Amino acid sequence: MKYNLETLAIHAGQDPEAMTGAVTVPIFQTSTYAQEALGQPRLGYEYSRTNNPTRQAYEQCLAALEGARHGIAFASGMATTNNCMYLLQSGDEVLCSDDVYGGTFRFFTKVMSKFGIKVHFVNTSDLSQVEKSLHPGIKLVWLESPTNPLLKLTDIRAVCKLAKANGSLVVVDNTFMSPAFQRPLELGADIVMHSATKYLGGHSDLVGGIMATNSDEINETMRFHQNAVGAIPGPFDCWLALRGLKTLAVRMQAHARNAQALAEFLESHPAVRQVIYPGLASHPQHALARTQMQGFGGMISFEVKGGLQEAKTLVESTKLFLLAESLGGVESLIEVPATMTHASIPRERRLEMGIADGLIRISVGIENFEDLKADLEQALARAVSKTFV
Ligand SMILES: *Cc1c(COP(=O)(O)O)cnc(C)c1O
Image (tube, rainbow, N blue to C red; front, side, top):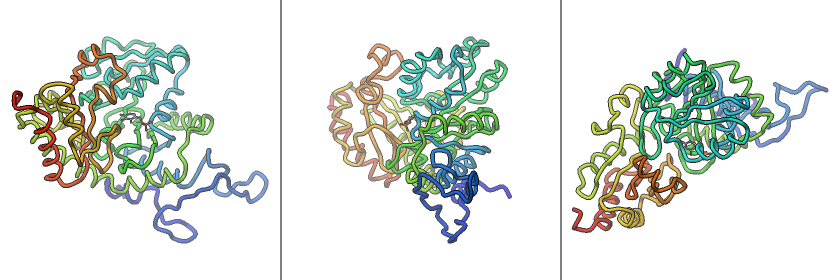
């Protein structure tokens, strides 16, 4: 029987526990397992870095949601990215979206460079740039779609085709969409990865990462490295993430419903210069968003009229939208990329990329829409003086 995503979220990897019939996967908070006889571990469990039943249930569930055979969990999104890089050898090259998560950029440029891995950053939204930049030395293509905070899309299917012809693996960071709205493996990617800290966990109460693949070979290598390197999540964090997954589908629908309505409200507001949201007809890649994704997500970026001062007043005036980095939780968050998440990028480069000083990013939560709208409305009124309106 083939089940749909909402059903898999609640049942995949989560058969009632064998001994008691507990319907919720227990937190197997143990480091080791007693063996039946010398060299005979029960059911293959020997040591919790290598394997743990709570982690296994979580890995199986996420894999099912991504339509994958295998899932492997890590201590954070960055630990997952790190492990993907162990698929490479010194001297290999990587092609990467130029608008990736800041931590990914930092890891590729400041850490991987020390081990002889060269990363080329290109605008992967532009297929001709991808085509021009691919050469036999590129062993891996790293995509993020939509990007952060400009919500630029990459045609994942088209890039996978080009990469495959070049013999390169494709990894897609699917953190912003979650499998509820985008399934990169179905579009041709070899690996899909997540910061589980965001929508998968969904409640801003854990840091974690996870990947999924249909390749037995990739699974074998990364599973070996998971154990050999050891950046694994503890049983309680796996249990929290698994609990988060159960409501992923309904949460994503609620995030997207609120975000669509807020994006439309912001677009019609006189104090707002520009709104970026894939669900708006004004988004330059709205057509691609409609075919590649099953929903438009919960992230919106918008530019308030004026500049940094107006942005500062706005984010300090909201009451429900909490001023914080991160995203993907049930509560709404607001931030200024220029001084927070993207402060490490030089201002010139930021402006070149399109990250204006007055750009604001919101992670739309699942609170009541009218309450969220009223909160932004009063904050906008405070932030932008009459001269701009
Ligand atoms: C947060 C984030 C990461 C890093 O994940 P951590 O869990 O913080 O290590 C990677 N990619 C994207 C898109 C993210 O938002």
